[in-house]
Length: 58
Image 1: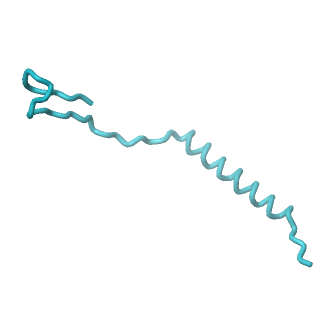
Image 2 (image 1 turned 60 degrees about the horizontal axis):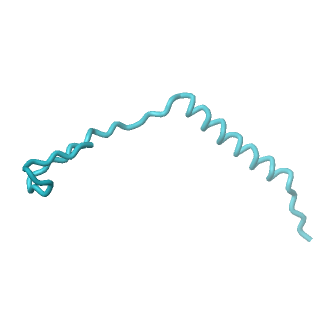
Image 3 (image 1 turned 120 degrees about the vertical axis):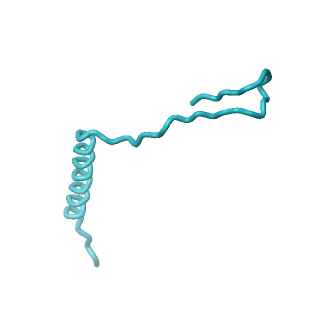
């Protein structure tokens, strides 16, 4: 990002603000794989925890 000002002083009324275009980031396939493996592990842990914890209602 750059700020160009015209005139002798820094308080000129004519200035231009140049902002480069924003490019959307695309994750790599390895990132997707790690995310899916992580979700699978969290789901497996939740399922294991639900199975091993038996509620005893008296």
